[in-house]
Image 1: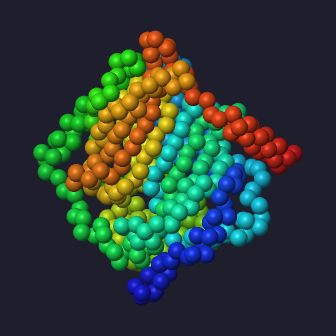
Image 2: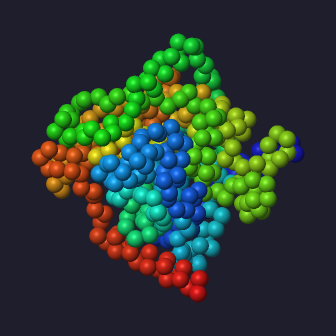
Length: 423
């Protein structure tokens, strides 16, 4: 196959028809029918997930320590729902809409460009997560990097086996044309990062000063607007980091990727996801996260991380700061720039607000990941509930009552269908 043939094989355009068809899904909630990397939470699940993105907080990785905290045992890091989920049974998208939207944006590259998440309940060993949701918005835009693009917001409500809402996530999905990204070549002038011993020593100095707040409460009354949070560093990003992230908790995402025969079976199911490499071997489009040559085919000079990986880093920054007794209520983050292999991200932030919300002391943070080139790659904001000398310990937030009713109904339907399958 010639280079031209290969380009035609994966250079699929965004079609007007697909944009219009995608709007048929707006406002429809349906069960999320994907089994993620982990199907039931365990002490090992929590530890492996945290360690996979570089988090050694004993609340997550040391059950004996966690037993001494207000939680009485290990709880999972906030982003666990990217790794832990069971297929939810229920009433699917209506047949006419499902048929009309089949193959939507097939062969077009999809980026996860950020997320807005709210958390309501901790995830503990023995828990299972299920989910339901759908598309909230569809918008066509022209981007600097890729030209024509389509931005969709997908909402997922994550619930446990007791039908309690654990988290609500809104993910920003950007569909782009690989040909446009490659021909624009906006990022191709970026040189791979290199480091002197002195520069590595500076990075190590930040690592050496890091650590979770832990058992010492960070009281609301002791926090001041304008105060800076400590630095955190992530990097230089290596292929080893990517392997640790996959092995620790993320698996390979919701794409059905597997080795050997499982890979063959997935290739029969999702043929357009497999694109031949230089040796003529069909391999996953996802390999742009570890293969420079393939990443260059969409206009990037090197392989790069996952958006969800940086989201884990950003929540790590907040949970280290807030301590065992705090609660991350919500976080909004955006992946504005790529984080290439070799890049180093330094996370910095400050307190920008504090208030009492429904009787609970809340603190607002602004923070961001900045690479060694001085470019902000991932700006973020968060709201944290902190313990208070006046108001007492943190009270977990409560989801919308109508959504709670819907969660109970969805779980009841799942249990009904699951019981019928096992009779």
